Length: 245
Image (cartoon, rainbow, N blue to C red; front, side, top):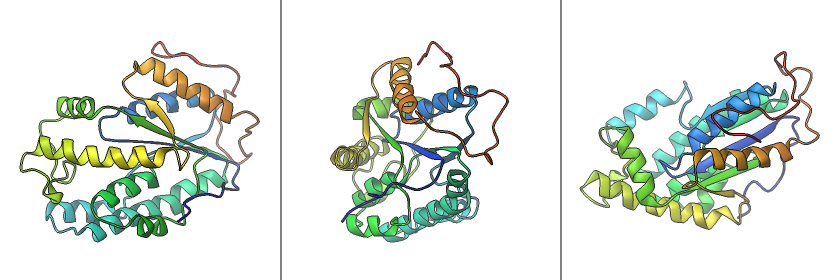
C-alpha cells in the first residue's frame, strides 16, 4: 500500500525526526529549532503523544496495563489526529516551519512490532501529509540503551516493551523491543524517503549536516504574510554550541 506519496500544497514546511529511544533525535531537533528561530523563521514545535485531549486517557490506560495492540495504536492515532488538525495543519497553512519530534513513522514501526498489520496502520494515518524532510537517526542498540538508562532510574512498562513478553528483565526487554523497532525503521527508511543520520557521530557534526539539508530545502521558501515573524529575517547561518552551517 502506498504511503504519504503526495506532497502537501501548503506554504509552510514540515520537518520531522524519527529514531529509536536514545538515538539523540530530540537533541538534534531542539538545536535545529534554536537555529531556525535565530534566523528569524516562524517555527512551531510538536512532539509525539502530547495532545491535551488524549494524553491523560493514554496515561491511565498504560498505568492499568489495559491496552491491546489495536487500542494502543488507536489511542496514539487519535492523539496524532488531534495535533495534526488543530496544530500542525493550521501552522503549515500559515507558512510556518513545523518541527515534529516523531511523526507517523513512529506508529508504523511500533505498532507493527506490537502485531498490527502494516497496511492497517498506513490506512489509519492516511490523512497525514508527507513531510518535506524526514530524518531518521540510527544508532546501535547498545548506544541507545546506555543513553536511556543514564538519563532515568528505571524504564517504563510500555517503553521497555514489557507488554510483548520479550523478557522479564526491563533492560533486556527494552533492548529486544528497540531492536525490533530498529529493524522496521531500517526497512522503511529507503522506500519512504527518510534521510538516515549516523547518530553515533559528534552532536555538532550531525547538526551541521542537518542544517545543510534544511538550508537547501528552504531555498526559495518565503513565510506567508500571516506568519508571526520576529524582527530578524533569514540572512546567514547562526553559530551556537560550536555548530555552524
